Length: 446
Image 1 (cartoon, rainbow, N blue to C red):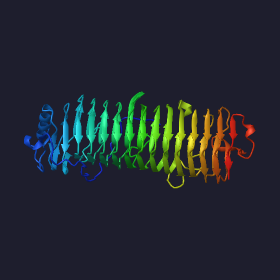
Image 2: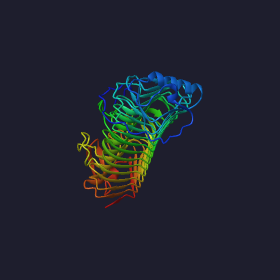
Image 3: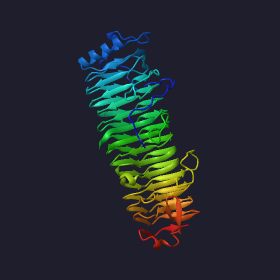
Image 4: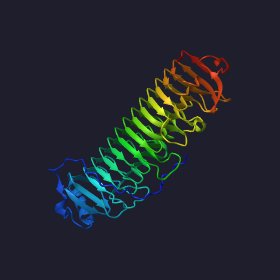
């Protein structure tokens, strides 16, 4: 799969702006009206708004925007700029390339603003809010809609993006590249054209961002591709990212997709309705953990894969995976080895998972020769044609399969396979001695 930071811009979404959630009515700081900014004025107020932003930053005071509608072009935030919207204050973009931008400006805060992109075309690697090189950034309780590109673009920055509502971004809601230690928390994201949240690095290196408590729904893949688009959360080359406690519903591809993302932790997310694999660790990663997630209704469940290009190491524990390959339409669920609940390949433990109602198999251990030191223990697998399939082709390595409870496996509880083809009878009944690299013990079949 090829990933490209440059995305095709798609036509705008004609959605009404959602009211901002801030409750600020009696502000502290400077009122933008004293600098000539007028609510409901028919014309472009870029000049007046910029003057107000500059004066407030100079005075080290927050700038308060009274209720009403405003029209503006690009505005530059200064170090220490704080812009606060009252309930009912709305700024609509009338010309690009952004509404708010900043470069090398620390201590910026945007709070309680309702921003309307006006379907104005934006640069591919930017955003309606476009921030580069900022520390201690805060964007909170804002509502952003109708963005013809990325809603928020963050580059080489750090800070917290929290409590925002982002609807109808033609590309991504949060596009985060080369940042360190971002906190992306409690945002509500809907109807993104290509991605909900992207946490990317331009080369493989530490990132350390935390993506938690967000709700992401109805993510499309308008720019096409084989998985670089259409994901609720996508982590690329960024190490040490934690994705936890998010609710993700309905995406063209995956809920959470990590590509070349090492020390990647995906914990306690609730996910429903995906056209491909719901959770992925793929390509050149080291150590990926998928713990206590709930996945319902996807083409595949969890894949920890690509040992062929160095992907290895991980834990897949305590997950609930159900209704896999049963309803979601996908070219991948074709009866040739897809429709699996959990698939692991190298140096990975899959334990304590509950897997139900998969079109192919509950667990898939290895794929062709890509199997090394895998343990599958203590899993409960119900109502799948194969309970566990394990690769037994030449070159495949060791697998330990113990203490699993397998119920209703109509084609076999534990079966050796070559790629997609069954190469053994039910090894839970007998015949495992023919495959010396497999160790089976204590499995219960009913």
